[in-house]
Image (cartoon, rainbow, N blue to C red):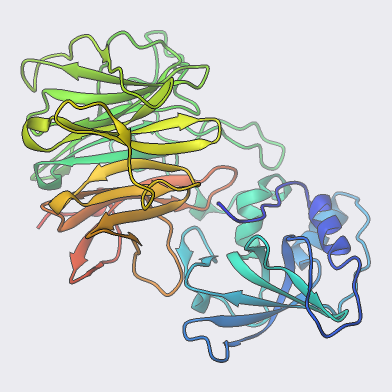
Length: 448
């Protein structure tokens, strides 16, 4: 998450962070900037911030969580003695992501007395005197959720609710589902899917996580080189009895270890754009055609577009589909490019392209543009860039939004906060006035 200090490592590393935070304390009433470090402790108070509507203050009595101390003792590690009189006053805003379980929620999911882990917004941590630390929260975790997400090896076992059966008949799984594209009002969906690497828990070997779908194994039954950690495109269609089993989209001429996802397809399903990522990490934008929706795809052709050697995320739009928008990637980030009516491409304007990485452009009604900037889903419409929000007081992350039904429905992906890597699932929301309704998992969504 951009702008967030991220602490990942062992329980001992976390203990050292808690032990060393506040080094160089001064007895002064003026806040002194401090390094941004993970905050661990127990909630002692929750209240509204004075003079700041929509902002809450959470006081955390800093210290090692009981779960952490128990695990360290079980591993034979020395538990450090900490100053238990340090209070951390955390500001929780509408931009904070609150995680008390497997999905992001609100601060109302938390209670006084619970153990928490807080990632501060970069540059907001300060010390006043020797006993008070202040910071803005970027991520506010129940410690059990943080431990499951980032310290799964410290667990003796994974809770049952974390495990999702690997059912290839369903669209969502415990693996990776990404890049939804909706056709026929949402009754046909293209998406990319793959398996996530497993994480050893309780001394057991880790198998890949997710649904092993058709096309993920070769003829001998061995998983394809791209299957674990990569992805390839699938198509799912909805009938009177619900969604049929997602089927692989057979792409000719791809290297066995290349990742691929369809980023645009026409309504007739006879032309598409594919972003293929080679083993070295370079992305290519490829185009494919076929004579009918039931025919196999023809040879993929590389599109030569400006922006550098690594390009993808292409989408055609406009009259006769002569306009093209895409993402150019480099070592420092990514930017969006546009070509219209066969003209040479150029970068989009500074309101859209910034110092941050922009990606996943999707054209909506009235020439609006959905796109992502780092970990935020944005919309450019009416000359203004705004964030796309799901219902809730605090922020619910979503990515790769694409509109359907003339903008009345939005398809996107949302995270589950699972061990090791986030489990991204596909979801749908319906417009209610100027806002979006509650997200519904795609497998459960029924077009009206």
